[in-house]
Length: 116
Image 1: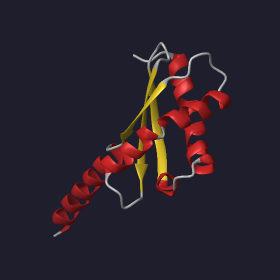
Image 2: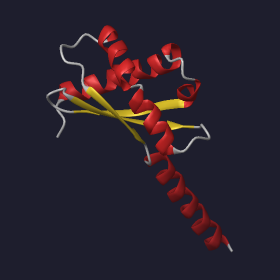
Image 3: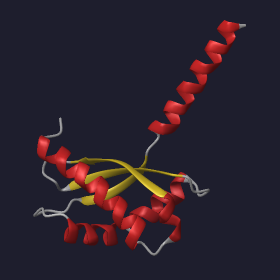
Image 4: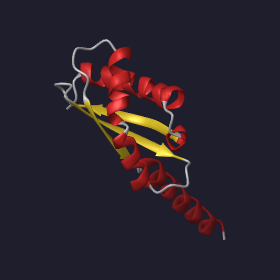
């Protein structure tokens, strides 16, 4: 279970990483990325950053691009967040939105079948 401190740091990291990608990233591919969540380890050594995108690139390509840019993002994060240890970042595509849309479409189909 995540500690309160790691939850607060994760919440702050979502905001700051989103700003870094939107404002300071030179890579146009990353401009379409939205950071959705961040799970930080209790000792603040590692953070799993979840993202989605409206880009036409595959999930794997976007993950690769973000993980290659993680050093730059981590450096910028260190200058914007006041914590002693800046976690190592691993970017992971967030499947929950697609999963939610799939469930919603199934429920919609069931409702339409019931009305027939």
